[in-house]
Length: 481
Ligand code: 4AD
Ligand code: MG
Image 1: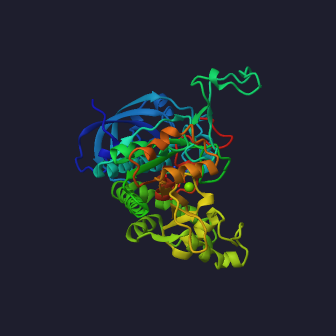
Image 2: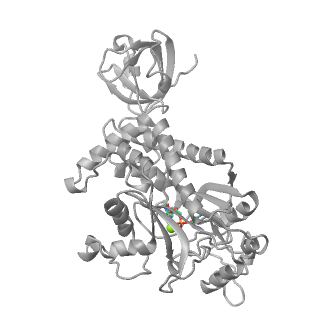
């Protein structure tokens, strides 16, 4: 008999049909009611066992976590909480789950506990909902770019360059560290390594993306990126997924327009396609908020927050304007910020970003034209401002509850200016000759950005720790699963 998925049953009115369902037991009550989940829906199907006619030994094996196959008639449920239920005529245990050992119980577990059993947490309703939303968002990203005619590029994971120039790379090597090959002067002889040179996991696909954009016009990447930054926060991962579009003949304004359109498109997609999951996550978040003091609670629920984001245009201001706002802000005046803003040129911390978004503008903000000194080498250099300060055509998008969700810029397309800046910033110009070829041969204005996929999933699901929106989080001292 063909297996039916639970998601196709819950709203049916086609009663009386005989069907087969296979899934995992969530709960078993009164020796009679099994809540089965097969992963297709965040909702369970209730299967009713005729215990008087079922072998005692079988009943004992219907435990939380066990995999079972049930066949029976689909009937309208008279009980509360579900429209349909299955009257079981045949039950088979596919895989036992020892209730003494199975870590998931039919009660609510804390997210911290679930992180310790990341290999089993998919079996909870919360993680089912999160990963359905994550899937929908990934699909929407591809659909958005596909509709616009962008080419999906697969840029390399192993590279010889540091795209951000920040030195936060994981090295890739086959060198046996107990037996390191040395040159005569004692330095490591990378010539004996697999690639004959030092390589690392990519921190961004941007540089290769730029090469492709200068041929195909509009491209995007969507892949894993790696950062060996030692930030143990709820917003950082050592391995995260990034979406990086790169467009020839775009300036920074076109770049901002595209980023805002993309964000709104994928959020709208999630609202349209993940109604049940988002409704569940909204309830979860409300519960979590109740634990907080009144003053810290959000005044919007998850769905209103997403809707609000769609209906309002993002505020666009320059870094210089942001510094003025922050300087005279209450938390700065009252010395409540951990890092006080006293002069132009400082990098913004997440407390400042969140102040701008959550307290001042109360909506997403795009910050542009950052000081050149705190941004990457490839960003386009603006004319010095009236005080002679150097800025670059950078743009960061800041989101409520998240801080920076997008980082991007118009790129420096002028060879001389780029080469000079690379020299000044100690970027190996010779080694990156391939990158500079785009500026040597048919250079053109172009721009792009990177959207941190997990930060997007955090925002849409209302989760608060980035470790809960990626299947197997990689963070300092944690690569267990
Ligand atoms: O601002 P970032 O470092 O920019 C780049 O990598 C550029 N090459 C992008 C481009 O222009 N093509 O990173 C972009 C985004 C951030 O805004 C953030 O959302 C996310 O990537 N991100 C991280 N997400 C999780 N964990 C980390 N450690 C992250 N670092 C950056
Ligand atoms: Mg950034």
